[in-house]
Image: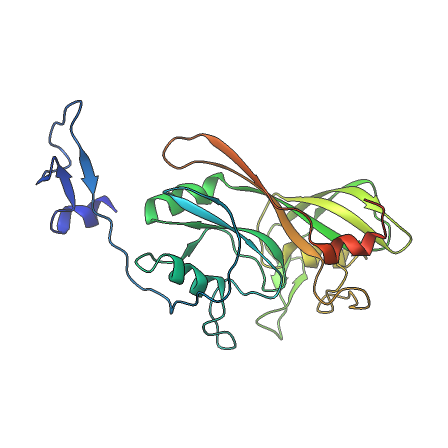
Length: 255
């Protein structure tokens, strides 16, 4: 980013005049970095995704199930990225975490490249999932995840896969489902879905990995807590999102 700023007109200024990165500055000087974005998505203001937190460096959306984060062949114009572009027409869409289309909850989007880089290493996420059956009260799943050889989407547990660790705690259960609090030590594609299917407790609604849609029309997975260091101040901030009704309803009043 610094190299780019040095090469563009008025990239780094002190009191309105161009300066070099090695020039001395003094107390009271106003330093401005001119960060210009490119590669904008088509804006779509209709989606109306709630904002859970926002400041000058980032915005956290509380996404419902059914909204993709990124545009794809099947989804052009109806994604979180398109809604972001409607709110911030001069900013590049830089999601720090990516949720599956049918996974609900918090998505962090950096407003500039500098914040995106710092947030990648500081964000800690807590997920909540309803899975089939009654799990142990606590547990850790350590099983390598690889791409299913016949698919570009489906993942599986396989010895030659990437190192993958999931920690969980059971919050509530009934005769049919367990509600879990989940923290990831690694971040593989579909990690939560694959790991709980692997131990015989697939997510409710996740018919791709062995769950059924008898009581919910999507995988019962929600990113409910986000803790991170604010990029410029290093202040620790925690943002929460309540459990959606469709997941609550699976617990039949046990919460």
